[in-house]
Length: 160
Image (cartoon, rainbow, N blue to C red):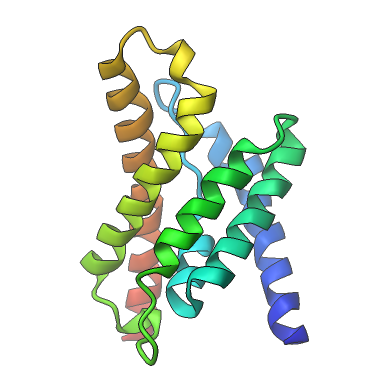
């Protein structure tokens, strides 16, 4: 338990550092990826709803404390972690998933995450509902999905 908690802490710090120093600099048309969702999804797939929800809440709270707007990331990442944990299958580790299964389920969770997060943070910025759907829901989901694909491709090729 202590080893797992230590590894999760190191992973969280590393992902937040990569997000802050590298990914946030790769903004395309005002859209940025949120790679913090990838370890939340991976942990939730492997352990279930409660752990995914708890880890999503804690990482969301850390992100919220660093941005100054408390609660939105914690709420959206908690719900996404719970949703991803719903796809947990006992005895079927994440590396046995087909790459498209991982990405499809990851995309579903991302849509719910960005629906909540962008609904609070960006809805007033959009000129219309369509711009909100295309730019913030679709754009951010696809951009984050690209990084999830690269993550999955890297680990998929290392296992073979």
